[in-house]
Length: 276
View 1 (cartoon, rainbow, N blue to C red):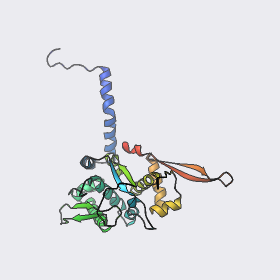
View 2: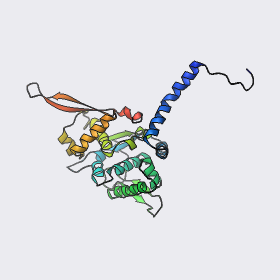
View 3: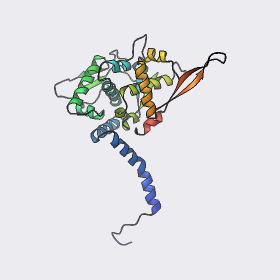
């Protein structure tokens, strides 16, 4: 072969390389349609910095007790900004992977970019600061070094919202895959859809070791604190993205009137690729 001559690629080799590149290329194009470059960069940084595959959330964060709503429901209820509060809190748990479970001193602008908020330098940063104050008031985080114009360093407290020291859940917890951030679901889904996803993962994982794929509406509202409208709209949104399948099945003994109930099947693997 003459010096400097480029060896032609055979058709089979070209097809191989094209096939090898296509999944990554398709994913990149899908992500570009969901968020701008700053958001994708911030999410990639957070996922890489976390060095984990799943993020655990305790049952006490998701499931209420003794008639009191869980922190998850309270975050959505607390006036405007519920989406930002929930997404920010989940993302703080992504990053606080090791003792003392604090979060790197990132400016509010970076958090705003990570969540895909408009105008991250101004209104986006303000919404982050408001959400962080709310999380502190709910005793889910402790914020130290709060100075005007300076990044703060939040530290996680107990996911039960009781102000106790944070400890990693060891039983009765729900794992949220890091693909939720990696593939931009944190940006695409609404707060109510995210809340319902966590709730269904908690419920379907089984209470007391009993695995279930259905739940009575009254039980759902009592245990998880979501309104009927929030539940209905969350189901519709998750279903539209292929994250949830709801079917109607017969229930009751043969001599009773036939009753129908909803059966829920969560497709967690759908998080492994970007929303469409």
